[in-house]
Length: 47
Image 1: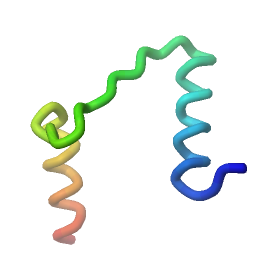
Image 2 (image 1 turned 45 degrees about the vertical axis):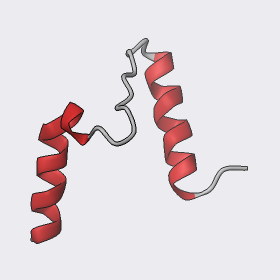
Image 3 (image 1 turned 30 degrees about the vertical axis):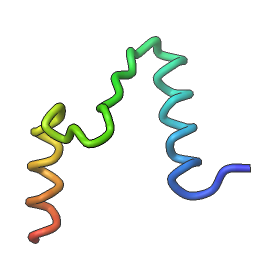
């Protein structure tokens, strides 16, 4: 049984598979691979 963020992850993965959306993972410790989202998250925390 899944709870919290694990449940969300399963739902998103299932959604992407059903719609044949490619999933690209960011390597651990490499936030620069997705700088836009990292920047957004930093600004959101500052609000």
